[in-house]
Length: 484
Ligand code: NAD
Image (spheres, rainbow, N blue to C red):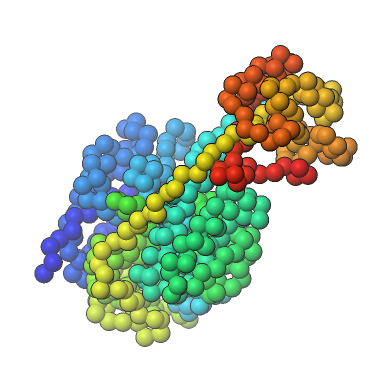
C-alpha cells in the first residue's frame, strides 16, 4: 500500500460543502491514498476583512502540501474583494490552466457528441497583468505583456500534457496576423518547441477562425494551447459546446503547487438542498489523482462516474425525460458512483491514464542567449486637443524639436499615420503617438531622449509616455506604423 499524500482541501461556499463531501466520499471508497488539511476560504474570510479571501495559514498549508482541492466560493457583493483564484494563481505561479471539455452524449445533451478536447491556457501574462492607465481625456490603455519564458513554459506544458495523456495533436491559437510581435513570439516559440515532439502533430490557427471552429467542429481539436485572454474565452465556448458546463473540472498548475476545482460557481440558489451535481469537482479531483501519481484510482473513479451517467442516474441539472432513468440528489449520485467502482462504461470510451510515469509534468526551459540591444528611436505619446486636432499643426510644431539628430519621423493616431501626408477623413482622438528617429537610423542615447522631451515640453506639448525603439541583434523590436 502506497503512503498517503497530504492535500489541502477547502469546502468553500454555497453548494461547495455538499459537492466536496460527495467527492471525498467517492475518492475514499475508491481507495485514494489521501490525508486532508482543511482550510477555510471564501465568503466568511472576506467578511473578516481579509481581502484575498484566504487566511495566512491557508498559504502555509498550500506551501506544505502543494496540492489544493477547492470547492467554489461566493465572492461577497461590493468592491474591495480580490479574486481568490487570481491571488492563488499569482502567489504560487500557477502558469497553466487546464480545462478538459468532453461530450457525454447521449447522456448529456450536446450537438457535438464527438467533442473531446483540452484547453491549456497561459495563466499569468497577457492583458491580465492588470497594468492599465487612463492617458488622456479620451484614451485608456491596458498593457499586453507576453514573455519568452512564459510562452515557452506553457507551450512545453501543452506538449508534455499531450504526451502524458496520449493525445495526438496540439493546436496553437494566436492573433499574430495583427499582433506580430507579442502573439508572433508565442507562435514562433510554438513552432520551435513542436520540433522537439515529432510524434505529436502541431498546427496553428488564428484565434478568430479557431474559436469559430470550436463552436462548429469541436471534434477536430485535441489539445489547444493559447494566450490568457483567448484561453479564457474559448474555454467557455468549448464547455458550452459540450453541454456540460456543470460537469467540467479544471486544474491550475505551477512548477510546485497545483489547484483543482470545478468550473462552475457556488450556486447559492440550490445550496443546502441536496440538488447540486458534484461531477465538476469530481472531474477536478480525477485530474488531481493523476497529478499526484495515483492514476489507477483516477481511472477507477472516472470509469464508475461514466457508468453512472450511462445508467441514467442523473442529478436535476442534466436530467432528461427519455434518457435519464432516475433523478437523484448530490448524496444519491455519490452513492451511485461508489456502487459502480470497479465497473467501466460500455458506450463511452473508458478512461485510461499512463501508469508508467507517475510524476507530475515538469518543465525545463532552454538556455537564453542574450541579444545585442540598441536604442534607435523613441515614440513619444502626446495629449493634444487643439487646432481642431489638425495633424499638420501638431506635426509642424514637433518638427521644431531636434535632439542631436533625433527628429520627428511620423505621427499616428490610434495606429493610423496622420502626419506627414495623412488622409483628411481619418478620425483623430486626443492621443498622438509621435515617432522620433535619426535620419541615418543611428543609435541614440538616453540623454538624447531626455533632451528631446525637454524640447517637446518647451514647445508646449504634454507628453504622457514614451516607448523606446530597440533593435535586438539588428532585428527590429517594434512594429512599423500603418503607412510607415
Ligand atoms: P454558478 O456557476 O454558481 O451558477 C450558475 C447556474 O448554474 C445556477 O443556476 C446554478 O444553480 C447552476 N449550477 C452551478 N453549479 C451547479 C452544480 N454543480 N449542479 C447543479 N447546478 C449548478 O454561477 P453564478 O450564479 O454566476 O455565481 C454564484 C457565485 O459563485 C458568485 O458569488 C460567483 O462569484 C461565484 N463563482 C465562484 C467560482 C469559483 O470559486 N471558482 C467560479 C464562478 C463563480
